[in-house]
Image (cartoon, rainbow, N blue to C red; front, side):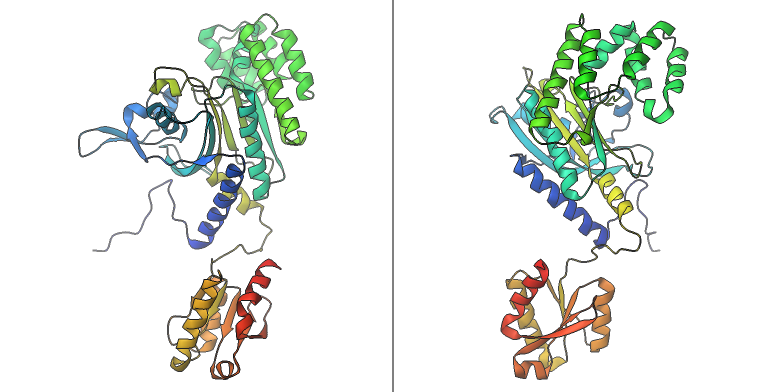
Length: 439
């Protein structure tokens, strides 16, 4: 009996047109990462379960794919790329610090699939380990900004907050430490459910009305980053950790300004709460204005995570770009009816008949040597069928090299999209395609 052709829920096949787009985005991200001096790292997909557990929070831990391997070991698929990085740093003390790395790899989470949310997805991470300077935090935010701009995004905004500030705001409002988690989860929903619904949720959680009012007063503070942070500093003057967080945010804003990141692409937002428990300081989250698909980029400082794998604390910060959501947004933003790139092939060399096959193969070899992606038609179909094959695949050009062309040392190049053709000297064919590729 044949096996039913099916894919596990929350996982996908990537056919060539979509894979080509993914590879293009990855190449652009890698270019930006390396411009800033981040170096590549890769880690195993499977880690010991104890390496992964207890790093993300109780709810997130439930989403880890855990199982027992054939050796009886408890193992799991990596949930993100940050914990494996912390393990690497802990097991390689010889790494030069600050250690700046990027990793572009798949991760797995056993959550309910939805638009832009999958059980297997790729993350594109940049992290700096071994620096407590806010320059490192500002740099990863800058990398996120430059990456999205290079890919072609023009309407997005990075929200910046600080876990120290969040804790101080809760204290300032009069919320007990035991209730702080409830407060964070509620205010994180403000943009989604609105101010009144957040108030109602806080009251329902037995947060005193006076504390709710003080929280709302701070959360509704508006203005430039400098204005917002200055006002918050005056309110939190007696909370040392909160003031430290405010100063960290002020530093980041100055460094972003000096790095040329335009103001319209970032803001200070005290309602933004990153969900992972290992964040200890500044946190970041980027969303696009259209379409509404959730965050496409996020991260923060996690000074305590690497210490779980070594005998000393090591400061660290980083940011992660979600490849799946970036691809989904790019496809949503395409102009209606505008085709994307469908193939990696630039030219199809046709085969006139058996007597010309040798010249077709030689020509294809010459073009590949010159860096032109080239296919030779496989089969004995008539010329019309070969050209239809090229059109269906989205190959831009086809070359006809028949007996007359061979005798005259020429080829006929057909531009299949524009439905026109030109005769080119055989010796000029590589230059022709390099010119067409850059024009």
